[in-house]
Structures are given as structure tokens and as C-alpha cells.
Length: 413
Ligand SMILES: Cc1cc2nc3c(=O)[nH]c(=O)nc-3n(C[C@H](O)[C@H](O)[C@H](O)COP(=O)(O)OP(=O)(O)OC[C@H]3O[C@@H](n4cnc5c(N)ncnc54)[C@H](O)[C@@H]3O)c2cc1C
Image (cartoon, rainbow, N blue to C red; front, side):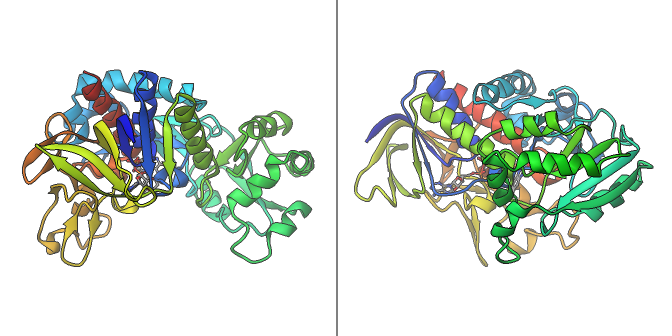
């Protein structure tokens, strides 16, 4: 099977590449073995929240303080500024709506009840201008009886710092009894599926409106609108107090919806999505990747003019660490990481952990290196690239989105 471009990995990075290439008329395929980090998505795409331990207000401006080896520096500050304008437009076209902008971080309320800086936040959630204050003083934190994945006490404790008077209440819903056959079955996605059916929301709203008398705002776990975002809009329209949704423990309802919208956009543009298929190896000739072999396709070769490796970091097995080695499992590409295992970790848990910076080595055009040589038509994008501690910096989605857009520009040149 022959395509113009094949992307390995169907997470945020692979889908961004696929959508942009397909929008430019390229015949594209994405091969993805499984779930991506978007299934664990908080609802906020981070660009840059922290540099050298200092919180960042203006991410684009702060990029100059990052190491030269950081993916943003390698893309170039001017390019980052431009691509950071393009990224939300691409996501909008897939049906994702946000608040936030690249030159100024906003804040979102986390499940720990603290305000965290971010770049783009899905419009399910509330964007705040201030880190150290909360606009309401009498707050109702509402949960569903038996739902263990929303830790109301953390939220309540966190809100104390803002001198907020908050109270926790639970709502029992008959419709949820059937999904709670055992303690682990009542997950956010189970609840969202019930709400998606439509007839339960009104009962919930009635109860929430009664309980919220005397409060200014209701905080709820984000368990609305798995397949249909309209449920979130309807909830906010029908509840007679402002509603602030807070991420629950994954699986993430808005994350799964976002992944579905992005996949749908890619396929509507004519892209081919091989879901549940694992790329196992590639055949190289004269420094070019000629084709890849996958688990499901067996002997059928998947050929392309250019390939993009967007297989994620450790979490998605884009790179793998065993007791004695660190490697890229599909092609055996060069890894940017220490070979001495004793250097992988800092024993102080909250320090910048060296292993978080590990990734596949790439040249200045983001082409993968193998034995020190750039593979002419194999590009690297997203969290499989090294050079950043996305968790510590709050830069995960930004790196995935912006390196992907940049890599596609290299391919389209
Ligand atoms: C659990 C978790 C939660 C996160 N939450 C956030 C957040 O809320 N906000 C934020 O800004 N950042 C977050 N991040 C940072 C995250 O890295 C980026 O946001 C981004 O989603 C990563 O996208 P990616 O496409 O590079 O990688 P991934 O999302 O990891 O996707 C890689 C894909 O490649 C596939 N793959 C791997 N190997 C193969 C193979 N051999 N063949 C075929 N397919 C393969 C995997 O199945 C997966 O689908 C989170 C990271 C993690 C790990």
C-alpha cells in the first residue's frame, strides 16, 4: 500500500501531522497501536508554565530562557510564535473550542484545588485570569454518590487559600445504580455515557438546582459529553448557577471526545487511520525508509515518500528503558539520553528527572538519526523527541502540537 505520508502514532502529535498534511491534499495514513496521552488529558493544552523553577506568565517570551537543545528553541522562537497561532485554528476546524492565548497564560482549577497556568483550555472548563483569587466566595462542590474518582476534599482544601466558603454535597442518581456493580465500574466515562443518552440530565439539574440554593457557583467533576459536547452546553444552560468543571481521575471524558474529534477530522479529510496496529520494523535503503511492516498487515508493506515518527515517550513505548538499556523499539534510532543507568534518575523525586529529557535524536530538520546519520525521509515529532521535561515545564501539548506543525512544514517544503 502506498501513501504520500505515513505517520506512526495517533496521539496529539500524529493527528496534528495527519490533519495538516491531509488539509494540504496529501494522501496520508496514521498507524497507531493504542490509546494516547489524550485519553488522560486534563482539558488544557500547556505551552510553557515554568522555566528554571519560575512560573511563566508570557510563554512565547519565556522560550528564550530554555536550553538551546529544547524542541521550542530548535523550532525557533519566531516559528513557535507563528505556529502557536496556527495550532488552535487547526484544532477548531476539528470541532475543539478553547479559551486562552499563546502570549499570556491563563489559569485553570486543578483537581487539587490549585490554579495552574495553561495555554489553551477546552471550553468545557473555566479560564481564570488570577492565580491567587477565586471569583466566588460561597461554593458548592458537588459529586455523585459512589463516584470515587473526584476527590472533593482536595478541592475544598485548595479553595481555603482563596478564603472561599465551600461545602461538599453528593447527589444520588438512580440511573447510576446499574453501572455500579463493583467499586471500579463507576468511572467518569460510564457516567458520561448515561448523561449522553439525554433523559437523565434534567433529573440531575433539578437536584443540583435545589442543592445549590445559597451558593454562588457549583464545582463538578468533568463527566459530561463523551460523544456529544452539547451535553456540557445544556448542563451549563440549565443549571441556574455558574458551573466550574474540574478534571476527574482518567479516563478523561473531554480527552476521549477530543481524540475522537481529531480522528474524525483526519478521516473526513480522506486520511486512513489504522487503529490498533503496531509498527514493528522498517526497511531502509540508501538512508531512506522505504516501507514499514505492521502487526496487522503482515507481509503487506506500507510505503510512503516521507514518514513521521510520533510514537510518544515512555508512556506509549515510543522509547523504552529496560534494566540495562534505553532504546527506540521500532527502528533502533539513536537516543538522546545517558547510557549510564545511574544517571537516569535524581534521587530527589521532585527534582528535574534526567530521564524525562530522553528521546529520539534528530537533526536540525527534525529528521531521525540512525548511527549518527540522518534518515532523509523519517521525521520525528511530539513527545518522542528529547530535550524537555514536559511535566516539570508544563509544555507537553505545546511541544506535540508545534513540533508536529513544524515537521509538516519541512515535509511540504
Ligand atoms: C498520562 C499523560 C497525561 C498528559 N496530560 C497532558 C495534559 O493534560 N496537557 C498537556 O499539555 N500535556 C499532557 N501530557 C503531555 C503529553 O505528552 C502531550 O500532551 C501529548 O499528548 C503527547 O502526544 P504524542 O502524540 O507525542 O504522544 P502520545 O500521546 O503518547 O501518542 C503516541 C501514540 O503512538 C502510538 N505508538 C507507539 N508505538 C507505536 C508503534 N510501534 N506502532 C504504532 N503506534 C505506536 C501509541 O499507541 C500512541 O497512540 C500528558 C502526558 C501523559 C503521559
